[in-house]
Length: 464
Image 1 (tube, rainbow, N blue to C red):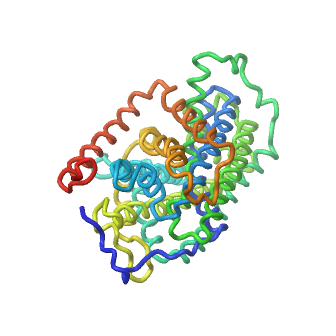
Image 2 (image 1 turned 135 degrees about the vertical axis):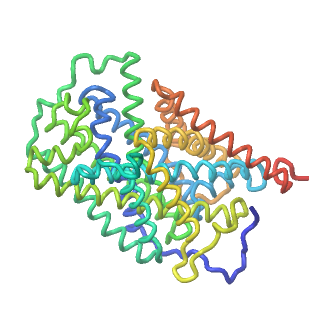
Image 3 (image 1 turned 30 degrees about the horizontal axis):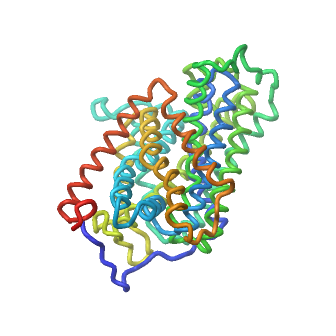
């Protein structure tokens, strides 16, 4: 690892993204395949229609955390998002070097896990349409579904291998398909809605250990579905008027998606009985296709399944676009491999970073979806979000004079509430120990690599 070439003649990123494109990229990232596969799982976590509480708590957490991202993104509009934030908060030449390196290291796991989850979900809906994909190849060891998921990663890289102006236009087209899918599900549910089915079971709101464990599990799934409102922060170096555009894109994206998710969950609860949503079966693995089949027929179900595939692909596209900028920013800063600082000579995008992220994501497509989501949430909360929520307060204390085009409302409550909420969903579930171990392994291995490297290079904490 060494400092990247900073020759002023080298290609650089250009500020081309406006508010509309910023919101489009965020929404496309947020509404991937997630809600279409987690809606019944959220209901199963709480055992009834009270699962709506999970979506509401998830929205509240997203708003609180979104204000952290909005303030930091407006103040430091650079490629890399969290990498740049953590480096500046904790000291560019001090502990910030370790923490920002650790962020990049965990991103090498969490970003591909996030991308892979969208690809796997897409492949599962493809298998709903074409059941023959449930077969296996290579001696029965590799499923066709996994190959479709990995192929989705490859196709996304190919489409992203062009300039950002073209990508922004593609984002609008893909977002249109995303919103059309959601609206179709909501309208179908609303026109065949049975209010009596929304009744919560007896004792659903008894505040005992089971209630809070179920709420934690439901909120974890909802949080996974809301994530993505910060995508534009990773493209901060390519945003026009970032002091205004980034905060508006973050907060408007959360508000829009929260309304859509709540409406979709209520629509599903008013059409499909609770017992079908809480048991393994067709309604749990392809819930929106089942809803459309029962309301508008088989043809409508197949059309919506195709639209879910479109939606999932749009999310993968957006995730790869945003995350590919982070190793690029770290490499420019001399805190990652030099090759990741390369920018395509013609289209001006970080091509090495993009291809590498796509390849690692394709590998994770061969893992179980539930394990992918659980590991992703634990690693990201413990090794990114918590450090950022604490960090925004640290930065206010250390650098009160720093220009802040957006100052979060009701400070310091948003980061404190987000911190409490994320810790609740990580520690309130029975399976927390396994996921915590994943995060600890990633954190310790990344720290070991950093300190060995820092010793050899005489950097913090070994600087003379």
